[in-house]
Image (cartoon, rainbow, N blue to C red; front, side, top):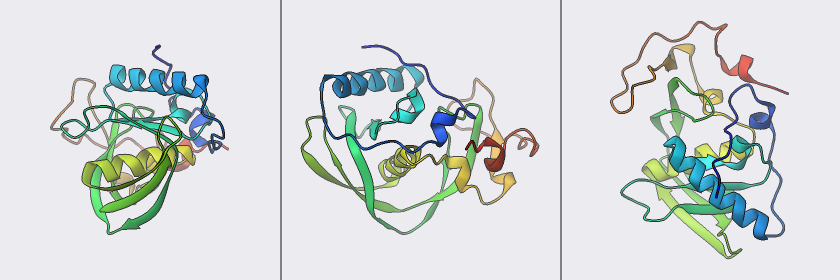
Amino acid sequence: MAILKLRIVPDPFLRAKAKRITRIDASVQRLADDMVETMHHEGGLGLAANQVGVLRRLIVIQIPEQDEEPRVLINPEVVEATGERQVEEGCLSVPGYRGHIFRSESVRVKAQDRHGKPLKINAEGLLAQALEHEIDHLNGILYIDHLKRHEDLWKIEANEEDGVSPAPAPQPEVLTPVEVSVG
């Protein structure tokens, strides 16, 4: 296994739509394992293949206290989303920032597991949020694209982990959804 290099905004891979995986072979298995290792190394809850420069529809997710093993989802798609709630979100590919956006209360996702077996996931809470976030990545969408107002985004200090306290939001010329768009 290997730790892969993360793509950071404004890298064009983050704005590209990932391609469907038609054959699950050793290269897909290796990519999944490397993504899990990279996610753990970076301290994330999830990772999409675009974030490591691979335009394939593959995500990995592991929610603390919920998942004993990382979830590997191939060709995932949200087939139903219900409700709406405001959440605080960040992203490994948008380091140093957090924001308030709206996500669904619950989602139903269909995908394949790492062996090609079809699966359906009914999720709510943090898992639903992580699934929407990572599937958005596969479609070239970042969480900052969901911001309603510039004030809903703020810079965090490098040493802040839990209990993030908002700092003043960056000036529009520093980071906005429009400016981070590539392509």
